[in-house]
Image (cartoon, rainbow, N blue to C red; front, side, top):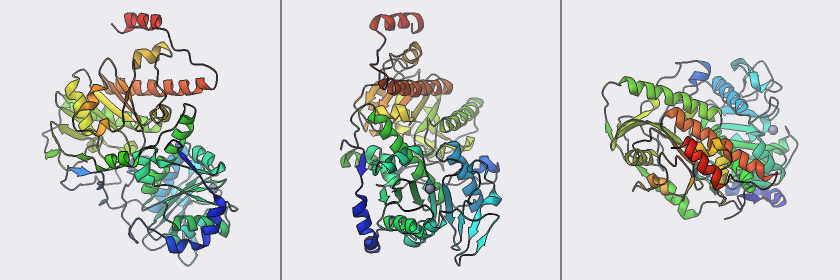
Length: 496
Ligand SMILES: [Zn+2]
């Protein structure tokens, strides 16, 4: 597969629009109401409002059985809509006037963002509740796009929340009549599925609702709207947001990567390999945390949050760890929203054991292999910054010999063949070291190491800004790498 987008025959879509109820293929059981990937949004609005979740005592798991599906959703729809809208706006994935969110609660009431209210300063009282019989409760009218939300809920009983917005990458696909191929990344493929495409109709019209609902009824959970934007459904608002973010990220990556050359998607075999990997750590109960552990927990949570906000990390993908001693480290938990992690969410891994009642990131074995092989590595991050990730989906070489800062921080950046990071033989440790601290992971973002949490984060920023400069430079002319004589001088002055 070389073309990471799919052109859509909208006429064919229109022809099939009336037949969709016969082809409905729900992926979730009807009436599913639990939040599978609840955003832990407490810090945004009300610190301390949510209890710490408890997990089953099951540290070993595979990716077909992601944890946290048993968490109860405790956030009121008003707060969840407000907080998610704030986040989408802050991530620059909507404008003040564009986009709307809704939740269908267990009573069948639809909670939705209001019409004509600044998305950048929404409050909980601005959220509108529409009763099943049509009565509206709230200070404002519901979003003018309420008809399509209602139509999608009618067509898909499994969908409990909807995100609609006009994020720039997906809008670019929408105006070209294309959908991004989510086989670019295993995460996008499994989280989003393959998007559908709904033919154009006037915003706010019943016809638009029919077109979108008909496309959802055919099975997709994400639908690109012709000359408009995207609608994403989920079994909770956090689930829909996760899909929305992953799809926009895939779209952005394709657009960036097209500047670099041929875009490669994963094969069915590669996707299966990602899906079938397992994480096996036996549980242990740690003793009281030492000062060093407390300090590292603090640093990790701060830099992970910063990484999300600067769009270096995706909310539910990637991992960040810090070494505690020769064979123990702290790492991000699996399938948890990175932006809202607390000190206690990080998982202590010691040898082949991990802190009981927690699940470490699926990359924990790769982190451990790197720490064991390289005593000088103190922090590791697997991340998905869009420009550097664009290199990962093309054969284009990432050359850090652009400016002195890039070379000094990144040195010669290696390219890791797809899947090495999932192997259990520790091969991933061959690709990084204190002298070669960063690598591009084919179709899976980047890997950066450092001699501290700050050092790893700093290198990640340098990697991403270097990648962006390299992509931008292609629009200007031929990229001239620094010659060997300059590299030799830099090594002599800075790297001895
Ligand atoms: Zn819209």
